Length: 382
Image (cartoon, rainbow, N blue to C red; front, side):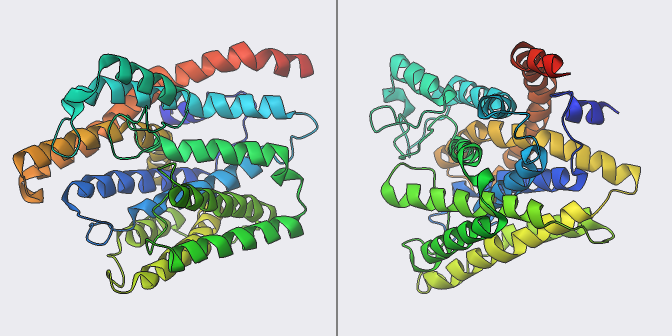
């Protein structure tokens, strides 16, 4: 009961959720945490275990497009651009702030040979925190970790930066496109992203976290294809009957994100083909199947509710602990087996913290902001 209340507490007039899609988002978020855990033992994308965890971002983007289209496509005329953007900021930004604050609090405990936190002044940390809370990408002068990240206190914030771009583009023009023109946009963006994956410098689409030209281009293409594909999918969606959709799709997501690197360093294009198959074929199918399925037993329903509720907070709070874990592994020259208790603690602790943040920070803040900036307008219309 508590989970259902949390799911619907943000807005009084929110449509019901696709319960299974919420659960799948949580499964992908937990897989992302494990993907980041293994960064401490990788020398490159090629030898990292849970190798394709970065593709979860593309799954999140297509889910986002699907859900935004479902929630808002039929509201235009009753709702303007300003109200839409308020709603999206209220939904997304409290956890952006929380992630940045947690990153700042933990920053000086993350020192290791890869980044020297001792040379960073309190003033520089304060500036970095301020710009991260506003979701302003770090410039070379404000990038305090030295890895070239847009958000050095909480790396995953880069995908929220692109999420905001997607929402703005949706409000300004994408929503106005005919289904035919939206299909054309999806096709063109897909061709661009496939080209980046297969012929690009990385042999994958693990890009977007940096402001350098190649990385930014990759991140933008990831957003444009997957977010637009989600919008197109909800327009064309006609549910089919499928049993056990949550469990089938969950296993598929974990499997797709865990596949080892394909082709090695000698044949980068082969891995690019795999990434293309995932974002262009498998993920749209999984979203379609997840949206078609229904939770028919209480246990699955509760699992989906819980995973859906903690998915976004988990994504936004776990990475400062990954920095800490990474530093611990490097400073102690630990193997994965030696650090396994710490890895499990990071995963479980991040899930617990995500729930705490959701229950006692995110939901109350969103409710306050909704009452303050949206409820009067809703009441006036009623």
